Image 1 (cartoon, rainbow, N blue to C red):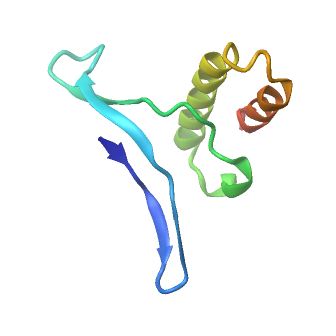
Image 2 (cartoon, one colour):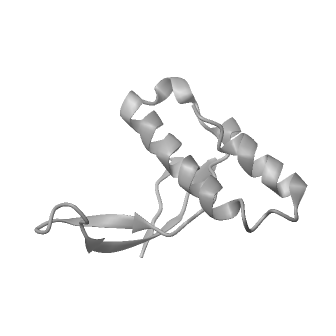
Image 3 (cartoon, rainbow, N blue to C red):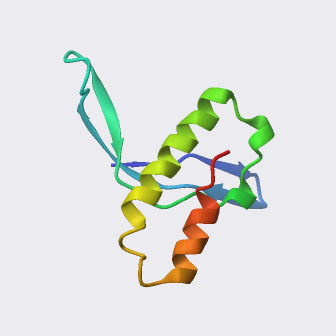
Length: 93
């Protein structure tokens, strides 16, 4: 399924982020479920107001960015420009 949080200004515009996710058994808690995010693309830093995020949200993004870099780096090794873009977008907050 997908998770599509967004912001919509009535009659003017909308912004939405779409992530493909799956529900799965929690790896540490056998009686619980959790979401696995299959989308591996960095969020555009220029669109995020980091001052509005809690420390927990910042930590979540930093963890996600580490995963993005780990998974995309080998795929982009022959495209220096794309790799540099991803590295910039995934810089720690």
